[in-house]
Image (cartoon, rainbow, N blue to C red; front, side):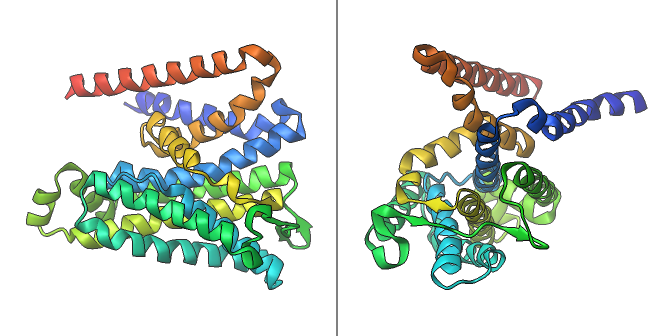
Length: 308
């Protein structure tokens, strides 16, 4: 039995070694920067793991919270001169508040209508960011966003930021896993499996749905704020509907598993840049990799259903 436990931990040990030594393999500072962006996106996808994976609520507006976090921290640090660290906290608060606001009608809406609400909210955020030019910079975006500093040392350099956000993503993964095994997480899963049965058993469906939206939005906003301070420039074109679809795809391909979804987020963000050297065959190989991932996920789900 002890031997089995050792083998069970082996993939996690290998994964830890890979992500820790990845900067040495990449060598290119640009590829490391793209990897950092993927880690920021991993926070957004972890939010979908909570929202869709745990609670069963489908959202195609996750990019709206990502944008809210990025613009909140960017505006506070550039327009008002507030510390980027306070901007990060404000981004989390902003995301959480809007998550609650959007989550309130989730109790009464069925899946197709809930998806429409989240898409509509994402479009509203995009239009407001585009038109409030005095605040958001409109189509020109916000530039010269201050970098994050810790004890007087900038951590927005790709290598330092990599280890910093790797630690943050790891803590978020542990937090989401802990949530999954807690009473709150079990209530969310019960709602996903059978909402009526969960309510009969005394689960406050409204409370846990709203809580799920709030946690998901908070994680997405945090990822957006980190992205803003990493790149020092944001523009609304970065937060399109296509991005929301990509985030959901990443979560699905990761099997709504915390480690799997985070890893897929980084891989699918980095992979296009690694395949650029293939030129005309770039999209062919990228599509092939996606097909392999889809087949693997489908096979895993089929195997799990057969085991039951």
